[in-house]
Length: 170
Image (spheres, rainbow, N blue to C red):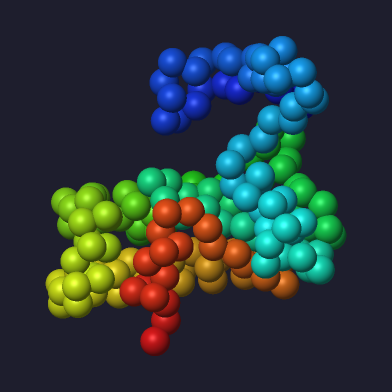
């Protein structure tokens, strides 16, 4: 609400950054601050696959996992901008993000996701098996989204969207 960003996971030095104020001063235009998954969901609602839909979940899948919720045609971010954080749902011996994001490849197979993707492009059997396993976990994440939010549409974005042909259900 005030444009202050606190404790960014991937930017440890960002403990309390008055980002709205910094951006408005630098560019001379109004700025509104939100998390990446919420911005992704809004972008899809107004400019992408979600045009014309009222109930959308935009899922970002890359180094981590996030979700933005469009409910009744409006962004719903909760009290602290954390609504829709399906990544933190309990799953197996951890949380959904460990299995349904780029973290899966490192945690479960001690490989970089990009390397597995490159091998899958070449038809490598082991890489394709790893993506099939990843797809099983992503399906569980999607199932949770369906049960929790009953959306008209789920849009997947982020760096792992390019690998979708390797983990989509057969």
